[in-house]
Length: 629
Image 1 (spheres, helix red, strand yellow):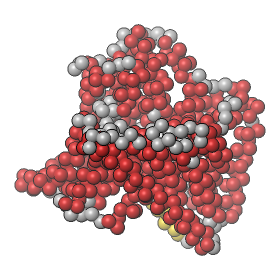
Image 2 (cartoon, rainbow, N blue to C red):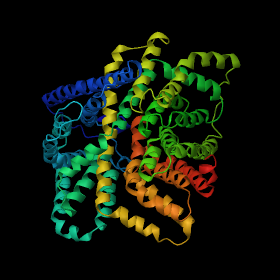
Image 3 (cartoon, one colour):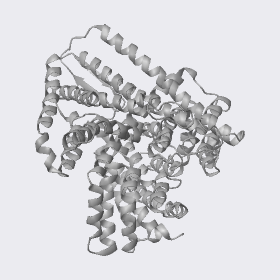
Image 4 (cartoon, rainbow, N blue to C red):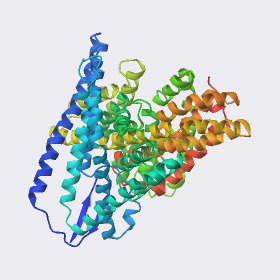
């Protein structure tokens, strides 16, 4: 039998030997439980929008701030992240790298698909008990504003983990080929047993275990198709359980820490905003205007993507949220014009790295807070480096699309451009409304997304008169699932960051860089290489918190201006963050663009090279960073 398997990231034809169908009772149970999870997840998205927008109105309009709003939003956010992760697991929407798996024969692909589920189940079973222990420990903490036990928030972790365990078991039960299932279960069990028995050998190896687990185990899981979040989770759990005496509850605690930053709440809200823009017709109006303006130029909409990311960057404080605000608007039209999905997601990732220095950036604020560098100076110095990298990306876009066939595209007349501009004006004003709200202090970087949602809803209802209420529930469920997939990766990656810190790796790196010969030039070169690697593992903020206080004094001692060094470090981390196979940002871009990560591997290499050229230019000419200070 030939079956067409459709996932969020790919459409893959899989040829199987007519597997027998399992009893429909299992499918009915899965659908029922899935619905019981999806509805609360959708309600949580609505609740977050209402709570945060109420906080804005109360503070700015009524001048009576709601002191409990952020705390309640934080509690509900962890539940949204974990229920969203469970929804994504049931729908097979957790991000995977399928470049290797897709090249195999159907039987091998089917086997590795089951192995991926078994590996995810193994990690979930390992952290079930620690998650309950963590929730119990949190019961002794009382929240400051609501005066309730913090276990109400922490209970989201064991609840979400248990739901994912249930969905994994149901999926395995429904596997038609029992031989494949048995082989997959035995394979995963044997690998886990071998590592467990090797514990006496691993403990004396010291920091070599960092390579074994954070490179070897994580890389093996990623390339064999295990969802990224669970591959990272297996790596950090194995490292802590087998090579240290750290309580395993710490793994869950670090996941909580990584997923609970309130600034990340902008991710689901901007994801929903992107869907809302499309549903209300705002996206179509914006694309129509942009296409009339640049549609006749080869690679025109790719330039629009570069400019749009530069425009909205820093509004939310999250690169994932920035991408979620732009991609749903431009990708459909770009695909209709023949752009390949892999190239689109590669360019989206590159623009995410390009715009890391553009204020108001959370990374800039973090650098200022942990190193003492003036935040206003960082804001001033961050604009031009982003433009330099945009220029290098634009040159590559020009080269790649210099022979694009636009014979079917007619150049719009002036009257058509003017008419499309008037129609699109309410939609085009959205980024300026959002940025003005942040700059004027009306809302925080997290709350501003709710202003965008309310604005988009009103524009859709009153001006474009397109608001399909029947699509709201599917949009809310999709928002929860996509957000859960992204946030679970961030959570497990935070665990890896903590493991690196505890190993002493950060201090050893700083010591080695202090003794480099060659002065400022060699220090900058090594910093670029080091932070590209660190960015792929730690993301921007954890890496800055870990290494900023150590390395910025060294930069100043060797004669590198602190603002200049900050721009170099941020851009290097951005390249690492969005560079596969380990860059978390790349998989976030793939999830937002609904593209299989394997499709973007080849085209992203050129964009990463263009970014590196731009970074080298910024590093060689300090004036680009400090010329306007």
